[in-house]
Length: 111
Image (cartoon, rainbow, N blue to C red; front, top):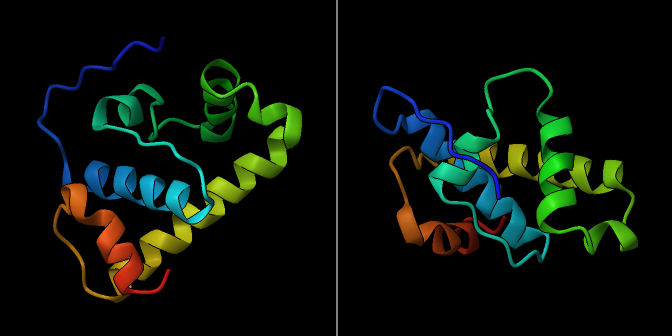
C-alpha cells in the first residue's frame, strides 16, 4: 500500500479539481476506481514523471489490467481523458469542489 504524502497546507482547490478529474476519467473509461485525496497526493502529482508513478500504481493496485492492456496505452488513456474531463469542467464553469457529485456533473456535461 502506498504511503500518504503529508502536505503542510490543507487541501488545495487545484488538488481537489485534479483528483476529481482523475475520478471522472476512471468513470468515463469504465474503470471502477476511485481516488481519495490521500491516494492522489501519494502519487506526488506535481513532481516530474507522473506517468511512471501511474504505472507503479497500476502495477501495485491493478496488475490484472496490465494483462489486458499495455501499460503505456492505459496510462495515456487515463491522462488524456483526465485532461479532457478537467477542460470540460472548466469550460462549463464548475470551479468548486464537487465531492460525491462529480459523476452527476460528468453525466450532466456529457463527458
